[in-house]
Length: 138
Image (tube, rainbow, N blue to C red; front, side):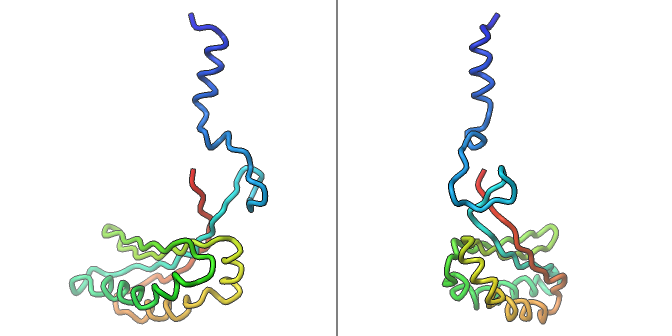
């Protein structure tokens, strides 16, 4: 039969290391145990498989046209593009530090308006939307 001390050590080892991580001073949080160091602005739409996926190709062209400008925004940590061939999603996720986000938000997320207008004008593109959320490694 295992000793009581061994059981306690096994239980402690089962707790994920990040759950034990102390709160980092100055890091924003939503609740005391839900902190974050990155915000993300997502631009998304649905594309059509019609015409050999021409709308998807046009979405990529629209992103290619602005990618350097987006990456140059103060505080941007990275830009990711997500495409799902099953549900026809095209998503662009711009990760940015909180201070940079505040500045970018005040500037109305430029070049967001022109990018979304370009997506909206593409034949076969629907459900053009945006969302802001936090990202934090686990």
